[in-house]
Image (cartoon, rainbow, N blue to C red):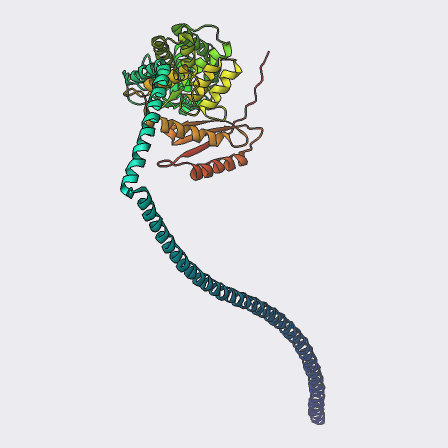
Length: 517
C-alpha cells in the first residue's frame, strides 16, 4: 500500500517536474523566437531603409537629369526664338528699306512725268511754230515761183517716173541676159521636177518567215522533250517560233530580217539532218551564221552586177549586201538602193550627166543603214564617213549628205539622187510607218538590255512582250542576275512607251566541256 502511494507521489512529482520543465523550455523557445523575429524585423527595416535610400537617390538623379534636359531644351528654344527674332528684325529692316526705295522711286517717277509733260508741251509749241514757219515758206515759194503745191508735186512725180522707167528698162535688160545664161540649167531643173510624178507598185517587207515541214510529226521533234529544243532555238537565234495548228508549217517571227534568215536556214538544215537536240542546234547555228557572210557578199555582188558598177572595195561590197537584211519603214533597204540607183541613172542619161556616177551615188545613198544599229549617229553621217573611208568621189559623199536635205547639194547628181530617193519611197505601199515604229521599239528594248554590264546578248521576242537576256556567267552571279533583270525592268518603265506588259528573263548558263581522246 505504501509502495503504491509512493509510486503515485513519484508520478505526481514527475508530472509536476515535467510540466515545470516544459514550461521553462517553452518559455526559452518563445524568447528565442521573439529574439529571432526582432532580428528579422530589424533586418527588414534596415533593407527597407537601404532600398528607400537607393530609390530616392535614383529618383533624385532622374529628376536632375530631367531638369537638365528641360533646361537644355529651353535654352535651345530661347536661342531659336532669338534667331527668329533677329531674322524677323532683319526682314523688317529690309522691307522698310525697300518701302523707302519704292517711295523714293515713285517720287522720282512723278518728277520725271512732270518734266516729260512740261517737255511735251514745249515740243508741241515748237512744232506749232515750225508748222507756221513751213506754211509761211510754202506761201512765199508759191508766190515767188507762181506755182501751187499740187502742181509742184505733179512735176516732181513726173520727173521721178521718167528716171524709174530708165532704171526698169535697164533692170529688165540685165535680167533677160541672165535668164539666157541660166536657160540650160533651168531647163534641166524643170525636167528633173517633172520626173517626181513617177509611181509604181511595191510590196512591204514582213516580220515573219514561213518554214515548211515534211510532216506534222516534225513539230514534236522541234519542240523536244519538255520544250528543250524550241527553247534552245529561240535562245541562240533570237527568233520567236510560232507552232500552231497550221499543218506542216512553222512561223519564224522577228523584227530583224538577218536573224530570221539565219534561223530559217538553220532550221531547214536541222530538218534535213534529222538530229535535233540542243548541242546540234548550237552547232548548226554557228555554221549557218558563218556561211551567211558569204551570202551577204553574194547579195552585194549581184546588186553591183545588175547595175553594171565595177571597181568597188570588198569591204563596201559586204556593206551593200547587209542592206538586204535592213528595212526602212518596211521597205527592203537593198532593193530600195538598187531602185534609186536605176532611177538616178535614167534621169542622169536624160540630162546628159555622168550615168555611172549617178548610179553609184544612188546605190550608196543609204549605205549608212547597213551599220546604223551598231554605231552611234544617223545613217546620213555614217554613210558619208563610209564613203570617205573607201575614198569615193566627193560628188557621192555630197549626194549621201544631202539626200534628206541635211546639207546643200553641190551638184546636179546630188539633186538627182534626192529626187530618185523620194520617188522610190513615196510610191503607194512602198513604206509602212507602223512597222518601222514596231521595229524601233524592239531595237530600243534590246539596246537597254545590251547597255547593262555583263550582258552578252539579248533578244526581243513575242512581238516585244518578252525580253530574253543572256549574261556572262563569269561576270554575273545567280544573285546578281536578279538585279540585272530588275535594273532592265526599271529602265524600260522609265524610258519606253509600250502597251501591256513586258516580261524580262535573264539567263545565266555555265558549261564545262571536255573532249575524250
